[in-house]
Length: 427
Image 1 (cartoon, helix red, strand yellow):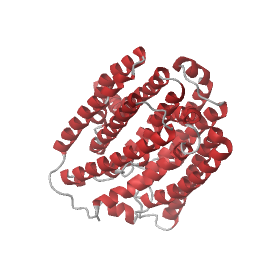
Image 2 (image 1 turned 30 degrees about the vertical axis):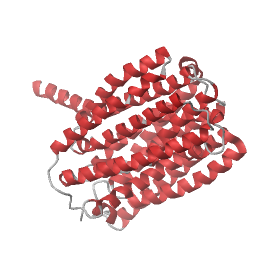
Image 3 (image 1 turned 135 degrees about the horizontal axis):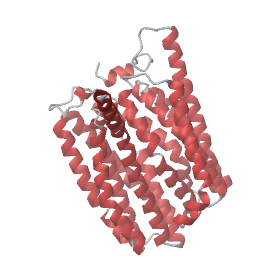
Image 4 (image 1 turned 90 degrees about the horizontal axis):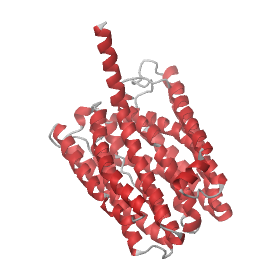
């Protein structure tokens, strides 16, 4: 009896450790949502539209300019993550994130058409720097997930919550955006602490991997293209649709992105585990889609309540409807991407994302000219349909070839070894 009780306690603790990254990352995303609400309530008119659109663009460009360092580290065997490899991965992430921040700033200024005051611009820059540092911190902690230390991965997010919530709360209650200028401070402290803590746990020495940056960027290119197709309606729409008219779409995008934390974090945790276990492909895909469908339904039912509680205008009803429904498919896509990355099918993901991004670009430009924000929302859901279909077919086809041609030469996911996967392991 005692032994069985202890086993139950260990299983419970193990499940809690697995859930911690999702819970803490989700809480940090909710803080970003509160920041968005604060921006809406503390400003009015054209400046409000410019600020909200600029904040949404910061999020979009952060995803597009991600180096892929986090996914690369998660797909790398634990002994291969040396201090030399780790430092180079972090430098690459920091450099690309800085370029992304500059590009987002340029787009925000163009879409604002001179409606941003100097104070609002300073706030926007503070939010951009905060976002950059938080992204660096997540990459810095990736080796903890590889080592199955999910609890240590999550702890820094708790520190961020403790420091950021009061600042955002003061800004919201007092309708004073100057409080948001302090947000980069806790982000800098947590990022530096995470870097030092992880660096101490890694084996010392340079990396033996050749062309490391190119291999990381292979992950980054696929991630950037995946992010781009989903953000193309907002990014390209900012060039055509006035900021005040585009603001509701940016608001809905930010709301839905905040809720993506569950499928994105869970799928990220599955990347290193993909080599050690064989998830049931159809069952897991269905589970992610079902979760997404439940969240979409809750969003649609609570639209009016959210608008009232948050004191925001979500714009035309079809925009909210289409972007909320797209969340269902996006949840499934997070899982499919985890399989592609965890089994070495990086280039397959790259091709799929590139085609989807090209179609989304053409569609977004045409939709913005023809139907403004409603057209852009249509492009959002159509892009998700295309990606989930092509990714699922690619994985299914690979499974079929593995079963028919090489039934004894498959990896832990039941998929055949690939040159991309071997290259990532340095073989």
